[in-house]
Length: 327
Image (cartoon, rainbow, N blue to C red; front, side, top):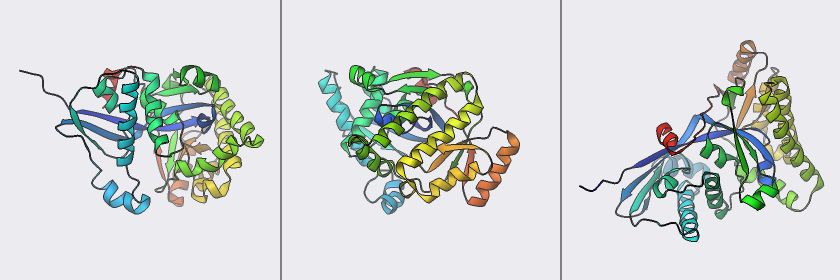
């Protein structure tokens, strides 16, 4: 009896840009980790016809109000097209079977590569980024690398590496080196494309302030790697704060938004270090004084109407067997 095709299901975990973001868009460096608190699930199921299913609630009800017609289906369609083009250009055979692709909250990261056996791990983030760029979304490789590799990853996106290799240098770090971290978030995060747009153009235009500030942000990740390896958490706290301050000086308060600034400030008012996890909508926090300071932070967040959670770091995803196990 012929072996029946199986359904493939994977989880794509959220990520936290601990240091260096958003310099990944600007040939910089970042240190990021996969966040187990939140994830998207994607399912690829063999079928007679090729079908991309919208989420029955998120697209039709919730996201239609807040995002118009820009739901997850366009991302799935874009990644399929980019994936097909990549396989053709690299003479990767695609079997004739079709599939039904569905998702829970966001774009898939591993399902297509598991189905068609794309071996180059370092190149997988590029495929996802290519799909987003096709839709006009301004983004960097940082998110995609974190979701492909898992764990804590030091990323070097220098122009030399990107030009020579086509991708950055990605070095896993021991997650046990991280101190206890917390996550603060609001219900309506900012849109990454909107936040990046103005600064990106200024950078392309050769704005000296933006170029030098992005270089300093990249250097923060370089210093942060040493601080983490040495468990110098006082240094780490200062770098986290400096990272956000640089971002704020580049983007400006009007772009960042009052709600996002308040999430950072609510932590700083109790003496904690804080910065965006990405482009806004959530903040990663380190409380150097321990549990008593965490309690103060919890009380401050409750008063401000923010949610606070303890960060759960996903272990590294070393190979396909690990990916399937965690899914």
